Figure 1 (cartoon, rainbow, N blue to C red):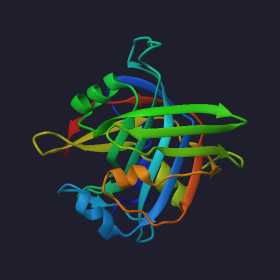
Figure 2: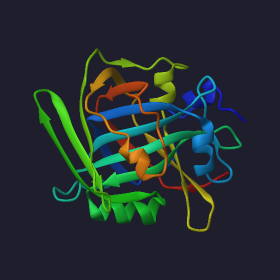
Figure 3: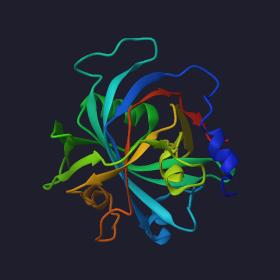
Figure 4: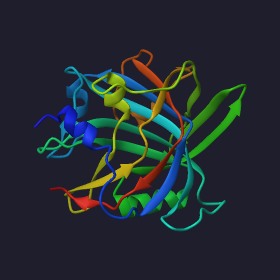
Length: 246
């Protein structure tokens, strides 16, 4: 069942229950390439289908800053609650038409966060050496996964006014995602909801950019710049516990 626009909009609603974590996502860059569905479909588990926009599949590389990470109700810790993350992702839906994100990898420079996310959320976090700094209004960001020789480097900044994505637009399809789907050790799917205000998005410039994180996952991207490059302003995020697939 293909997700309806009504279902996509409903995912913005705050889930019932209490979140298990609070965090802030900042300096978000969304790089997206249009990809042949046959390139991505073999990487998905049974029960998930590629979510397509106007018949096209999309793969995203998303570097950003994780900030103020903490269990709900507790204060952040200076040495643990701030780190860098870069994820490689595509967009999927299940048999019921629930639209979500499927992560191929999530590189991170905080070892404890990597191990916690692997065990608690069954997500494919990877240890990496990462650096980021703000210079002359641009974010200079670098990621090298453990075991890889080369680093993926990005220099990016917003280049236009911030706006909310129009429902049904490509920007809405790529950015407005509130459900992560993971694969538990027993082979079953698990769903995790996040809640935050809708992104304030802006066109962005990124030069240099790198497709290496996709290659690290055995996914070949076209040898061309991203088809979509977006900046997102920071959002405060509530993370809800995993639940079994319906």
